[in-house]
Image (cartoon, rainbow, N blue to C red):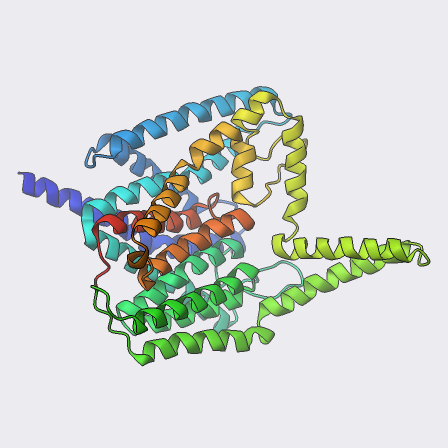
Length: 453
């Protein structure tokens, strides 16, 4: 009886893992629906909402792991906080839209639920679950890239930007979100190419092509960062081949990583990102010319000071794509907010008067929306993840710095770094889903399992 119960539980866990594979199809359906029809209905959001409902039921009522009691306590604390957050903002916000508030809450807690859910599933399935999760992520990322590639060569792709800038996002809708998924996925397909099969070099090509095609800064920088990091650690592991786990690196694999890195650098002058940066700089230079023209040209010191300020503003604009203006607005909201809103948050869009607008820098959005207390509750799993990584780093330094560990951690660093700098990660279910699974993989892996092909 226990055998059949165990088999049934294992089957359910594998269904949860298989959900990874349908992510690109959910996003392409949403992209086509939003681009080709006037409807704003998001099919993927409904499916993901149902998935989260099933996940919460599983976490609360199917006791299969020793950590579930602690997880339930965490969610109950978070639920109490969210009720207080909604109550305070219903009373204090100039404009309160319950549907918008609930939608924002759903999008942000998606990451937390997935992190705990897959942590349990991967732990219970042991090494099989860990390896399967990474393979499924590699396959999903390959499908995303293949769709962008096919759309690009057939001339049916949707543009990444509405005005002026170049790039396309295939048949998907949001270039920022798809770009982050591919940025986090590149280290994983590289890992699979190095450890599983040379066929994954095709996946690497498709992902690199897609990141270039989208034309965002995030995509371009992730290519250079990942390929350089991979080359360094692959060469290191090749030279210091005295590990317990056998390394079968051929010169071919090192050459492949080198070719991708050199090829990416050589293609840079012709890439959409370079042209987009030039367009951005041209716009800023035009603005500078107008502002300088208004000044008194005889006041050379004032002109130099103004130019210096504008140059600093240009850098900020290029890095943050104008988000600093909205960040400053939220700082003003927070400064004027009541103590209760400072502690429990200002909700979606802050204390806006007309149309709510997010900063699109996830950690900042979550801080101002959930307040000091809510922010600390929310980031607890992330702090736990960082603690585990640092603990392994200090306790098992040489074991930690193997290329497979570094590549998975690099995916997580890219996800969390982009969440801080550019957003569309923790507040975007399609993206946070992958980040949460990768973080769960690396936490479970360190104590118990080894990556085996």
